[in-house]
Image (tube, rainbow, N blue to C red; front, side):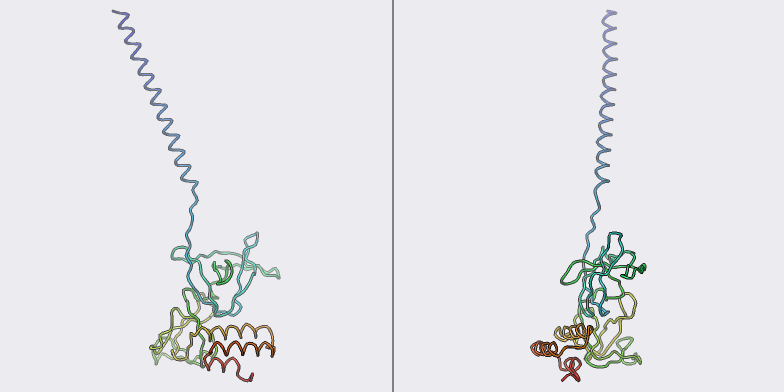
Length: 253
């Protein structure tokens, strides 16, 4: 009887130790699984999803930059005033960064750069003062026009916008409205919004393209007669507004 009791006691003790060992093994195994899960979660990269919105260039010969191996911005290309850009957004915010602009002369200056894409090529960086963000329409001024601070006749200023000037609009023009808001270059980010008489503005694609083309051509040197005649042939087929035609070729006939 004593042997049986002793045997039963040893058996129970053994079960207790085995149970402890199994419990420790399970706990250790669970810990390893948890650690692995945490590790796998933390190494997953956060992938940003960017959107693009239209913008209109406000400055002639707006420079476009790419980053060199040191992360500095160097000149790569340019776009004309009135051209369209596509600005990258991270949520509601423009995708931008602080960087050093490096000129060919070796001069370096810190600026804020915005990531953009052009209509016909890849991604670049430029500065926010050169374009009007969330604008999708280009326009050209048909006659020298007074600038208004608001869409009210009494809010006229003494300043004017010259005939042939290119401007940016947020939306298609409403010709039933007396005044239209346009944005012009003023050296500040996103330009300056002003008001003009609606009948002084053309958003016709042919008009805007013709003015952009002539400004680009004339920015190099005096227009070659052969090139001028060829442009005349092309522009005739484009049915340009008479006021724009007069602006482009006044004194050239």
